Image (cartoon, rainbow, N blue to C red; front, side, top):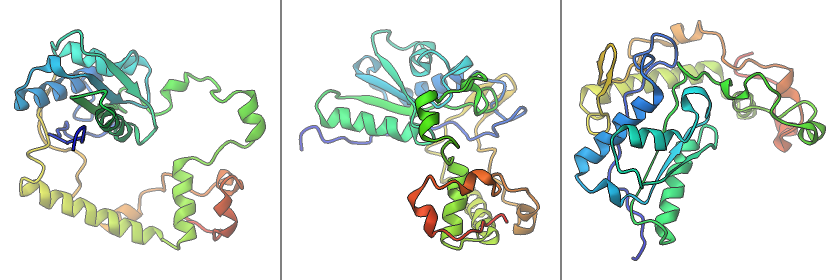
Length: 250
């Protein structure tokens, strides 16, 4: 089929803790992305000048992630200057949206080759930084939603309450996830997708976020990231009226 998008390869940097002291926290986000792009091109051995577009998802496009981060990373990797780039923000689905846009461009016949991905250094550009202390919504929005919208974290709590998913169930699921991730890592299941990243402290080649030794009891000691609050009770979501007034963190 003509213009049928095909996924050729996928790589990623290791996952690091998004706080000061994390494995990648001393490295500029542009340098993380440029090394990842360079590794992708090196192992596929084709002319990078043939790339029609580089699409990068990034939520906090401010500070070190300002300017088109993808374009900066592409040039930092020593790649051809004529290749364009754009940055996408669809919140937590930004890199996924970048991939969708690349596939859509190929299907439409606009691209032949596109690279899509994402970058977010939450240790260097923390969540909420892009607001710069300003009120981002404006008069008309605030007039329509005087209490603001329900955010993703509280929305997850509402869904859990609606379907009766308790804290212990989620902690059990999380523990199992960490255990399976560690099993996969030991079996080499991530070796083809992770590329080593050079940092001021040395080479980072493994995920830092897997906690195989954690237990349900230890997780249960941690405070809820999004406890039930007055914001969760606002009738912004139509399904809210059918939700049980309880939370897995209550």
